[in-house]
Image (tube, rainbow, N blue to C red; front, side):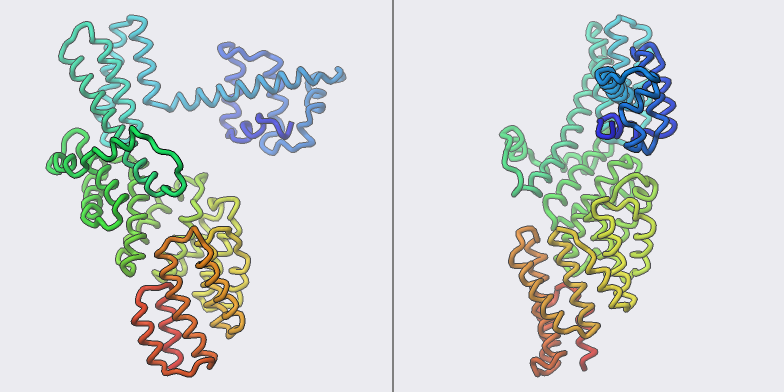
Length: 481
């Protein structure tokens, strides 16, 4: 029973949903047999653990039927029925909260039954609700499309102005929805071009023939209908496909600041993700020119999206980027705060790795190098970008502790990582190789392996410019004077 698909479904239910599901099964409308309901009530006593020894099929059957001989076919029938009914229960819960589908399905049924008066009353109420909404997102667009389509079909025989208006509105909403879908997809196929092995002639044709700039020019001086939402889509698309388009970034930023209510919270979240990617590129290319903006956005995500939704999981890349931003901003306390507040939201597979990564970085900033090295050695994330971070952190700890032989060994490992990796971005490799060159010179000078003027190392530092741990290396050079 432990391996049955039923158990994960039941585990996912809250205590309130457990009671709701009981009422659902007890209703004659859904056709649940009495013996299946009794089976559920017996099984659910072991919620939420459902320990294997407690829910053995034979034991459950005995609890239900006493000394009656075990019937495996009946047990499997009851389990199968419960799985089917639990899926129906989840469907009903989802549908109850799915406004776009509920509204259109209700109107569709009223229209098909020729309940004209009822249709008019309900459709006017739904349209009023839609028009009063301040924000736009794919779900509201979908609802606008379906509801207006039903109104258009209902009034087709009359061919009046309301029919024409509903027809225009549903087509307009669908067009905006299409653009909302296609722009992120264009960015997706661009980002994962090396992984995608197929193409669509239809989509490729649209992409090559759609004139973003011309369309945007038509919208620039307009603030009616979906124009603000469309401008957001295009600005986000432009910075997503051209990481050097600062003009579009500033326009998007201004739009969000002044017209925030136009966008739903979920849409804002998607916009922020696009902006973060843009700012990350800008910071890598231009010496952290937008470091403050990036740090502010990451903290906004933590406070508005993750803190208020404790069941959501934080992406592995988000964890790494936030910890590195804290280091760059010298906000050491934020690293430990992040580790304590959000540890249960770290990806389960890498939970301990992220915890150790946090502590290793925090302790290094607190100059507790031996303990930092101990935590860094426990991080085992099979991602080259993480391996790069850990190797550099180990090198810094080795240097601070005077473990110079280990430093040279780890430096060789880092060189091998850069030469063998197919996953690191060219900019990451470029900065990494610069770090290797300057750190090697620093190490040689520190150990006396090469006797040279400190000024030569300082000139090399100035010449190399942007590379990893530039500030730390600069401090170590000053210490050698």
